[in-house]
Image 1 (tube, one colour):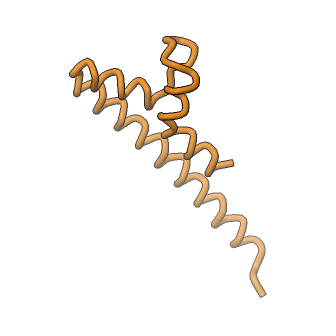
Image 2 (cartoon, rainbow, N blue to C red):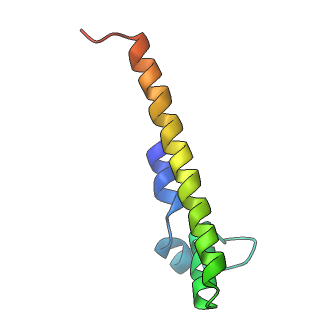
Image 3 (cartoon, rainbow, N blue to C red):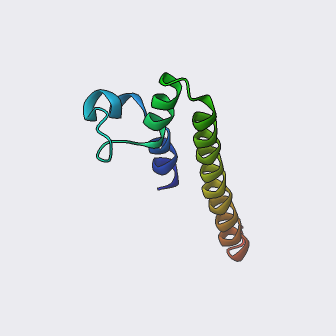
Length: 77
């Protein structure tokens, strides 16, 4: 589940080609960053990218923390 989330968080090409760029309907974070760069609005693109990195880090850190707790409860033989 986490790997699927991480993969779709950065999905760009397929969404842009298949779904298009319909504001409010098919707009994803990666397409938002692309649109900001195309508009030469690098500050907004950087802030959105930083937000995406922070969300990814929090999800992965939480997953690894929970996984470590599960294996700590079940000792390996």
